[in-house]
Amino acid sequence: MKLKPLRFALHFVLLLVLPTGCATDRAPSGGPANTLPLQVTGVTPAPGSTGIQPSSIKFTFSSYISTAALRKSLSISPRMRGYEIRGGGYEAEIRFHEPLEPDRTYTITLNRSLSGHRGNQLGNSFIYAFSTGAVIDSGRIGGKVFTRRNQPAENVTVFAYRQAGTLPSPPLSPGSQPDYIMQTGTDGTFEFHHIQEGTYRLQVFVDSNRDRMFNHEKEMYAAGRNMLVETGASGLVYRLTSPRPSPQQTAMQPAPAESTGSVTGSVQGATGTIVVEACHTETRQCHTIAIHADTPSPKQFTMDELPPGHYIFSAYLPGKSNSDQVPPWNGGSVIPFAPADRFVISTEPQRVRKGWTTGNVRLAFPEQL
Image 1: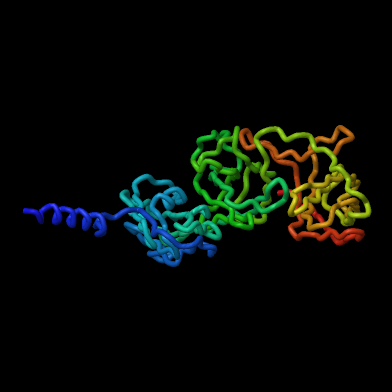
Image 2: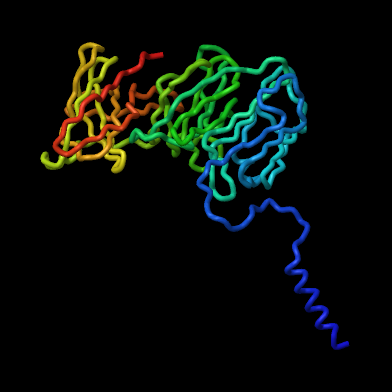
């Protein structure tokens, strides 16, 4: 009789230390952060398959992926509700519970924000496509997004809305559902693959709360120059702006001339007032000058008193120029649409040395679409 308490205690300890058989969506514990990009190492059926009616799609990853993380980063086009995600490991499965449309291309996009349990994200958004018919859509649209300080903007959300024709459709509302979704990569680029040929309206914004909805009153956005773009468009350029009015630009306090350098260059492809910017890659401080061009031919400029370092140069055409101050860049509006000021960026950094004059900065405005 005296052994019963001991047996009970041993039984209780065994219950605590022995593993249970319940499955959980919990990542393995321990280990350092993984600096290698997350990779999709396999997909079944094979990408680009045609004439199939799969009941499920299976993905294999290079790192452990939770079901919750996958659900937040995944989008399917055309939109469908009848599916479930089974994951919680190095493999995940998407099971369809509704019939797929005949003769239709389906795309499954894993946005770049998808991360493994050790924090490693995809290098770029991953797009998987298959077709229930004999042909798979081949439309593409690509571009690049920059910050206001001319740095590549990563993890920016890009919505693509297919339009019925070349005429603008009714204005977008904040809750409008896009046909395709993706995010920019580490270099700020995005490219939609396997979309239907036609005309699209893009909505570019920073989804700060990750709710897949554009809050035009709070979230940063990039309006771009054109409301509508056609499939096949590439090299589109966007620059982020704040929904709140930007403060008036002020001239930078010049540094002592003996500790600075100068840059010479040219701008072409535009007339009128042109504002040239030089943004320091480390301090993010931008220096600006305004010049006037009578013809689209190359117009020379010189920027003096630049602190040493590396700079990204850009230029824009201000929509308004009615004061002696350098007119600020206007980022436009998404809802309702208003185009941003035309701009061009030279992504190759230029080094400024103390007491030296650096040349060869070339900025050329592209032809308007």
